Image 1 (cartoon, rainbow, N blue to C red):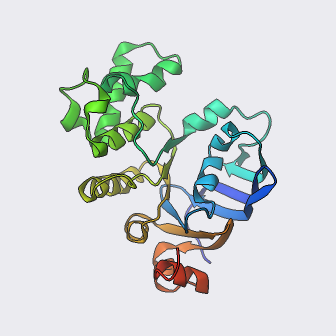
Image 2: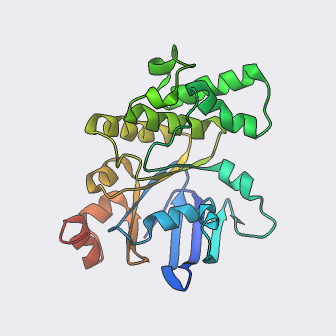
Length: 255
């Protein structure tokens, strides 16, 4: 498979265990800069487990074990001397269910900056506004900064969570089923947002929605039972897959 894009992240011989259970088996996968990579596959195949390895989120789960390498800009993020806080700042994550803090809209967005020691009010306000603009939410909340974020609609809450991720200026954004709990209109807005964000960020999205993967991604990885079955440009995966299992999954024969 010929590739002409720059690799930002590379997984090499990745294996992951929950206790004694092998959940990921020898995953080798490139993630390309300023592209959207979709990870598809049936429930329980390891999709979310895999992307949580890209910012070391799985370390928060007890009795787990990682083997292999994940290189970010050529540096193995699992090397003992790597700062995990810095990795999670560089590789942000948006979860399946919107999870705004029970605070004001402004406090939700300024939280990450304050945690990182930033106290300059003017700079914080600039970052909050910029992030809301990038998340296509500014016009809807610019007069509501002091309102509780919990009063926003589900779709607005998810865009708020995206904006919260953007305030600390990550370079990679991981989306784990970001539209699973949203209505079609909100889903469309998130997809348009992802298309715009890839101009600046490298994006990985886990999705069960085949149409969504086809619409928003440049590359697609199909996983099955902890293994990477096939990876290629999205149009090839959806039109001329090499593996019969890939074809059966995307045509709805299982999954």
